[in-house]
Image: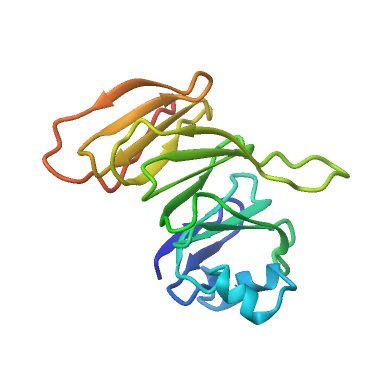
Length: 206
């Protein structure tokens, strides 16, 4: 398993594997309750699906804090989105490429306010998408900004509790704090002697 996420509103674990599948387990029983195949997002021919990299290894999974939106990203930079409202049936909402062809996507995270999705990877940038779901309207993720101040791979990223800031970690030996309203770097954390591959942020007041 490459990425694991605890469901915020149910006793479940969501995990993505190197075969390109997402597995959901019930924590109490230890039994698998669901399995998602990103291929199911598309009605395209098998040959076309293969060319789109849909069978690539899942590099990151996440689920919104309200438990309604689940995402999985593969290392060929495709992001898959499901409506996770119904625990027994995740409904495909969208499939889109988050970064240019030939790049690797390493991490994808949903913001605490459930309105934004950030991805990062080998293209040296973090990309923020608007994933607001509007009633009675088609779901269409849209790129809202590209944060390209790093000069090497961006391995990890995390939102602040209020979804207004983002911290990124990079092979350029630094972590950076971005103000998402302006897109500017508020602070750079340097001094690392090697690649920074993981970042965590606790800015809650409680």
